[in-house]
Image (cartoon, rainbow, N blue to C red):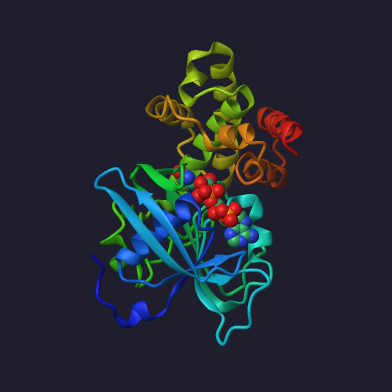
Length: 308
Ligand SMILES: NC(=O)c1ccc[n+]([C@@H]2O[C@H](COP(=O)([O-])OP(=O)(O)OC[C@H]3O[C@@H](n4cnc5c(N)ncnc54)[C@H](OP(=O)(O)O)[C@@H]3O)[C@@H](O)[C@H]2O)c1
């Protein structure tokens, strides 16, 4: 069931990255009454997919499509965009896309900084951190877990509190289960980042499930060093960062013990990984601060050596 249209619903959402997470977001946006148009690399007029939700049967999803590259001539630039391609493809996906100077962009990607320098200076960037999990299941997309999702705009450390949610957030949150706009968004985003920065490259390099990390003393020691180094950078960026990431990482690894991380899946498939947006982001922050992160440096090099 969808919500009746309101003036705020008149502006469509464009979707760059109609994959696992992008389609889940499109489903919630449609349920909330918004029009969603997928930006594709072919000329198909519509995209038809099936979502398998944890509760209930298969949900057919139909999206209007427009060609993303080369972008067709359009009467008005894009004002609302969801970016849900994998982080390394952001620059290619956004290249030539006519975005309005004040466009709102939802960044639904792991890691941080993948859209830096790619958006108009006046764009409003809303970051999305989701603990949900979606994966391909034959021709369908299976929502393995519908967990919490947080949206927010990260204020600079020491800067003013993050802004109030935009007008579209309330209607969307009524149809997107467990969607929040928390005051402490940046810390939530960083917690997810540290979890990814420890679990993803270790499971990818050693080709193990998430739960294996803390069962293996050598990997557990490496995880501890990675978490400690991440805390050092994040505390330098923001003295209010609690600086005790390891127990949270361990709890995440336990809660997802049987899962294959996205980096392990990418490495198994020989695909480019998101390491630059995850551990690479921490390294870039450390470089600016004059800190060294030997464990992260080693892992980034090792992952890239396998899959440049
Ligand atoms: N899946 C999850 O459970 C999950 C959970 C939390 C966060 N995330 C994050 O969400 C992001 C997306 O992950 P995902 O699992 O949804 O990936 P995915 O299933 O591979 O989807 C990515 C989509 O991006 C599209 N794409 C790539 N380059 C494009 C371009 N130049 N123009 C238009 N579309 C392009 C791909 O299109 P084609 O199909 O045509 O190649 C694909 O459909 C990642 O940052 C991931 O870390 C995922």
